[in-house]
Picture (tube, rainbow, N blue to C red):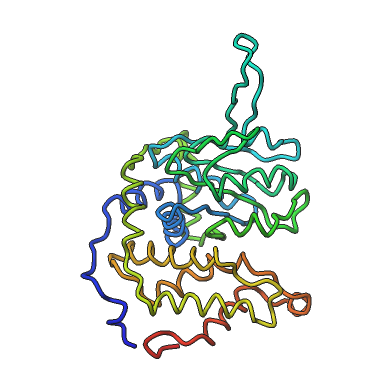
Length: 325
């Protein structure tokens, strides 16, 4: 098999709106091009993002910058131990005038939702997002309330070994399309950061919307039209299957994870100006899509094995269409 098996269509042109979104976010975020690209890929794939990193590196700023760049409704939920499921999804109550049950929407009934420090709330409240993230709806007292489109959850969390955190359950983790880390800035980036944020006005507060609802929905539709060859789909399936038989993993990747990987590869190809998926798109997206879905065996944890090292070994073991490794 050669690369021509994948390149079945004429290359597309980069999307100007994606470039405008990147530039707008860069007004508040210094550097971090790869992180911003991953956020945009999740948006284009109708996916959700979990940003995990130490405090103070810009997790909330990144999520807020993307939200401010979109002409969409936006709600922020600051998760604490006393936040209840009803605060998230809403509740029904009797209207004293009409005598009928009335739905009071929660903070999640918005197009863009920032779930800040999601692992500081109880597992019961965390689980309130399960139906929301998978089905795009809220069901209360037997009545289903659809969420507006586009819909995206951007969650931030501190590392699980920090005080006052509750690990997210596996079912919750599997609903995040991507898990990303920002990392510390370089010295040069930090100098730029200090210059931007020591004035009287925060760059984040000056951001305006550069992309509307219909434009987002149109780009999301375009992602679904990116060509995936039988070879590309086979490669994803074999890579996902390899995680389920790895001796280092107690739990491999679910079918949902495989779908997410191929979908992310489509968006990656589109951002690269192509309308077909290459193996490199799949390999590039695999760490952000797959690693948070792994559960290491106790033996692997004792050896300080990381999910990324397991994935890299699996990628090397699965033949790439075209004969490359």
